[in-house]
Length: 334
Image 1 (cartoon, one colour):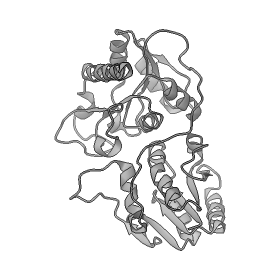
Image 2 (cartoon, helix red, strand yellow; image 1 turned 90 degrees about the horizontal axis):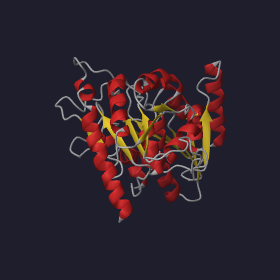
Image 3 (cartoon, helix red, strand yellow; image 1 turned 30 degrees about the vertical axis):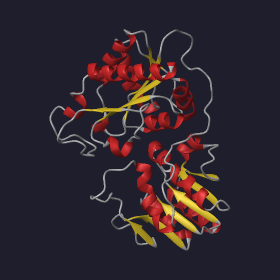
Image 4 (tube, one colour; image 1 turned 135 degrees about the vertical axis):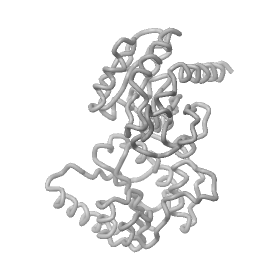
């Protein structure tokens, strides 16, 4: 192998969770060039990473879209890749895969989209096996190539070391209350109450979110001591998570960034499965409501009151956080 391309356009967490596979490809073929194609808006997340050789930023919003995509497809064809792994499986990634002319093309068996792959892997995890962490699942694409999941750690280039929290005394707790699906959303009022509980033990609480989440942050901050950070860009987010003592969030991209940066974090889970979307690590525990209906992986909850998230009280999350804080203090003192 001389040239390898991996495609995973979005989202933030998914793009990051695929990097152990890229690192394994480099280990298997150290002389090969491994390229990673992601959506342009996410490229700042991985700039400077040594898990691959080149980061290719696809401009999804370019207009006219069809002409931009055709140019990109032809550009990829000129690269003469020997191996192409399509982790995304949407119309654009399949187009790029088909026109790449790579002699070995591997992807997931999505209905109506897998005809241009030489090897097709079922996206569903085998039912006879216990659930596995998402980075481990990607290795099923390359098992036939003799590549094993030896290292599933998430890593990121070193972020800027500024301090967005300013001066002050107390544990710096960062909250990222946004969620990609409505079913993953913990109520803003719960975050506000949790912020007050944390403030009562001397912590300083800060809120972080994208430009589209500012109204949510305002609702969380209303009536609480939490302060909203102007952290709407990826570099600002990386800086904030790197500087925080602790992150509280849902199953989201921010959580995976915290894992990669080794910033302790607590993830609030609802419809998704923590066995799949969270590593087993004492610095990164999870909390969820133990209900028969979860994990369901539904993007919208069909049940009245959305019990898996709404019934998970701020007090129970606060108790879990106090246990995490205590364990971290014990580890630091040992």
